[in-house]
Length: 128
Image (cartoon, rainbow, N blue to C red; front, side, top):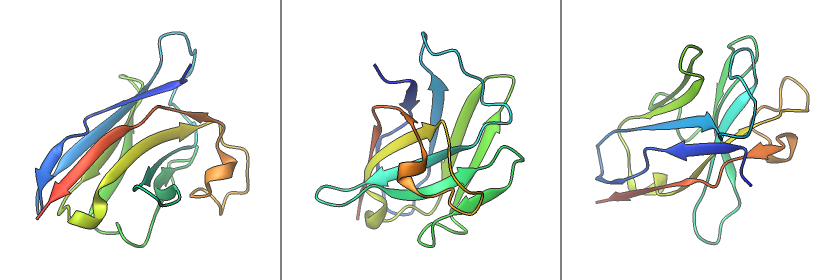
């Protein structure tokens, strides 16, 4: 059973925006407050790549392809992680996953294998 649940994926045209959300599943006792969390994505036939991460101290890190367009944030009151995606292009198409349960060095927030709890993903499709 997935520990996290993503939502907000949709089909949009290039140049559009989406906001993804991630919350703990009903049976997973977890708080986003002061937790290191991240968003990853994968396209068909490609490895899962790190998109954005937020550390326990609120430091953020972004993949090179999304810098200046995507913003990761969390709402502690709603116990929710967000990914605001602007200026979407076709290359952003893929399944987006939320991850937490980080166990790694502070400089490797976008390394997939350092996360142990995942959601099933939400699909983002960008058309030209």
